[in-house]
Length: 147
Image 1 (cartoon, rainbow, N blue to C red):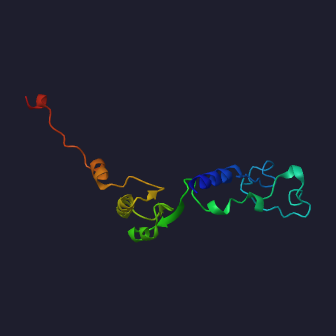
Image 2 (image 1 turned 135 degrees about the vertical axis):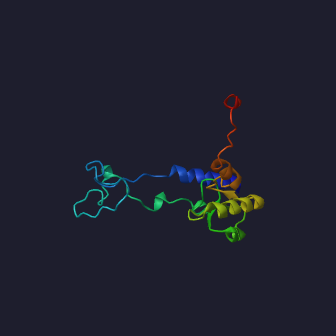
């Protein structure tokens, strides 16, 4: 099953397509992101061969790996330590929400490590490191100045 999942993840990666917005090469102000062509005479809307591909069902990822992180685990967004209760280390990886502060982030990361969960956006939030950076070192007077 694990080898099959890895194979399907590779298949998903190979099917990755970049769809171009119509007219993106003509005007600088047009973003590269896909927008459906809607013009009456638009060649891309009418699926002319040289005008670029359209997103369609053939580009979808295999159902077994749909929504899965490239590491082979499903993501769970966590806001506090209680959010780790639903996570299974063999199936899930956690992503700590952006609104979580350093104090709570440190607690979540420690608890996740105890439970064997993978943290996708790990950040060193230990207080000891921060205290060392904030505290200035004690300056000792030079012996030459005393003489």
